[in-house]
Amino acid sequence: MGILSRIRSWIAPGKSRRVKGAYDAAQTTDENANHWANTDNYSANAGMDSGTRAILRERSRYEADNNSYYRGAVETRASDLVGTGPRLQLQIPNDPTRSKAKQIERAFARWARAIDYAEKLRLMEKAALRDGEDFAVMITNDRLPESGLTKVTLDLRLYEADQCTDPWDFGFDPLYTDGVRYDDRGNVESYTFLKQHPGGVTPFVTWDTTEIPAEQVIHWYRPGRIGQHRGIPEMQAALPLFAQLRRYTLATLTAAETAAMLAGVMKSTLSPESGEANDESTFDKIPMARGTLLTLPPGWEASQFKPEQPTGTYKDFKNELLNEIGRTINMPFNVIAGNSSGYNYSSGRLDHQGYHRGIEVDRSRLRARVIDPVFLAWVQEAALAGEIPAALPPLSEWVWDWFFDGWAAIDPLKEANARTVAMNGGWSNLAIVCAEDGLDWEEVLTQRAKEIALARSLGMTQADILPTIPDAAPATAEEAFANA
Image 1 (tube, one colour):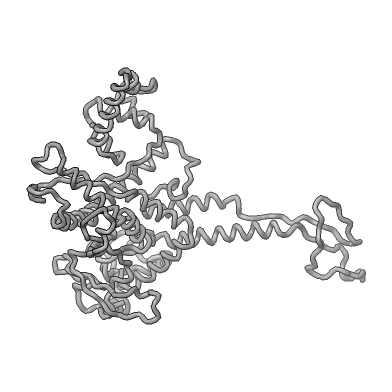
Image 2 (cartoon, rainbow, N blue to C red):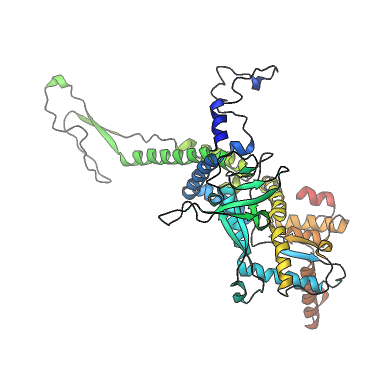
């Protein structure tokens, strides 16, 4: 924590304001005083200072390493967002057959394979969820051409959030936030990285730093406040819930084990004043054979242990916690729980619509913050390496987009029928449908033409070549979308 942050914490701003408005939530009473005790008016950077981020990051990593639901949510989100990686579709003026565009697309795909681009993007997304942020620095890797896939030496070196910091930053510069330097308009100018990870395996950690221009650095995080320059774990609000989930599971298991271990108890009916000898020691254990009857000494009676445990409420409590946890990243219950047994088609589709919409928004951010900057840097180096055809229009006239893996249909027949009606009605087309599935419509048409040509050369009839429309296909658009 910087000096200014410490001073602010001592002053405790906002604790003694006079309230004029008649808002219930603005009133401080004996009942809500403790609930609002930790409120503050810190800025985004001050409230997310290095000490706070470090604690949240370490606890989030610990929970992700020891909680299967947390780990599964991180893996699922990275797979859904990135999948097998983005695929380039390029349009260049004066290239009617797209021969030059396809040449560039293939060159970029080979380079992406050479650096394992998709895996690095998935790692960046996992780190953003778990740690709050991560960094990718564009470097030169002279060994890439050895792969035989590309001549371009551009590569990405990933850094964890711990390594982007400045140990000599004492919080006096208002335009410098723990390794991130920006101007008075909010534009980032440079990043400062430790040359060694502060939690490295070397016994002696050096605090040497290096400053890298912002043009070479990709900072992947999701800002939640205006003026925020560093990230915190995206599921930090759910960290206490993950802890509750594990504690409740252990408590339920302990109760079940205790009930299973104790078969019964024996008690004496003789009073202490009777003077009868009691040969059994307190809490003594008596072995039992399965399927047998026992005879007891005079004055003793046996009763079975009552296996009372909270198993009846365990499932409901667990499901409610997972449902609340999933809201932090817009993930529906059946995705974070990996269980759709209670879903039907309509509810499953409805829940997935909001989740998929969130993924599409994040993909838009990924394009703007990560993929496009990398592509522009690749084009510059690819042109120097001879991977780009000559005599092309300037880069400012190029138009490109990125295709990701599509979503598996919940009910393929219903969704296919709806798409057919939309295309026949004129408010959809093959490009839109293929984009939803992560496919290139030109490649689909080209492949289909090859199949039809081969089928005809083999003497197949028109009925053999073209698939028939299922009998269940709806006749109207209203019926199609009602079913979907």
